[in-house]
Image (cartoon, rainbow, N blue to C red; front, side, top):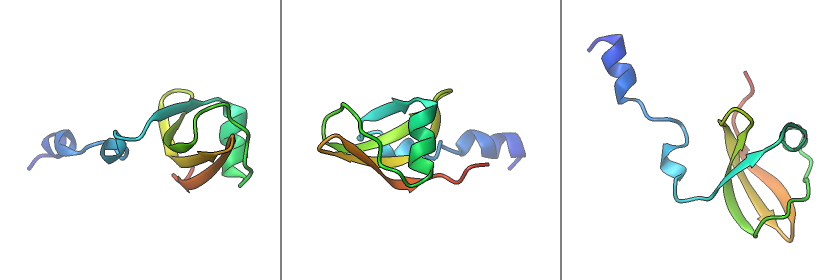
Length: 77
């Protein structure tokens, strides 16, 4: 199989998470999560697939009582 054909068969890393709500985060919140901090968020409690500006998937986070905690984050390039 040629490289282009193989690439067409690949799905994005977040493809299996579409049942989770999507949350777009601004740069300061992303930086806080990457440092292990727990920023406050005015969103409903639950699990979210989180993205940074530019629609880049960064991982999965949980929100409880307005506090966001990173559960799994993608490694920075």
